[in-house]
Length: 229
Image: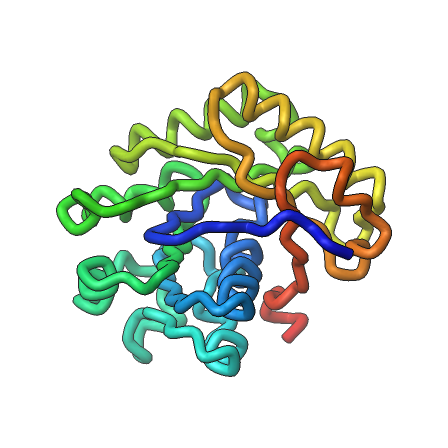
């Protein structure tokens, strides 16, 4: 199945509310870009969520040859606001695609305020991951409220939307189509670009790409709760 190509380069900041699935999106976007010949690096700036963080997928990234910037080993299981010099370094000399996985809601975006100087003058896209099957983003008003909160806290503007509509293992084809219509309306009302939507890998073959005006990112789940590992 041939789909439109996702063409993202520069520094891409992935934000969203809790439960939006932004870390899974960040990981699968990194894998997609790497497989398409793009030099990729990922920085874990999620200092809020103790369960779903990029650092839980170190082996996955390493096996693909993707550089990952993480807190020091002694802090890997800590929930502390730790920003290492490596983060500043990756922003001074970014890869073709440098993905920053930021914590959920405005609380997680606070960390970006400390990076203002390092981000100044850089080519940046800040993308809001939206799952309309999650609390607080089930309507346009809720999505826009979270957008405004993240922008205010981070002191950066969101430039685009990623539709990640899913019900985890219960996701069906109809959920993907319904979610697409939702984020397309959100993009139109907010004036933002709909960069791409996602689909679980096992449903991708059942989707008709021509039904969508944007690319589709195949999502293979890489993260689990601690009790599932």
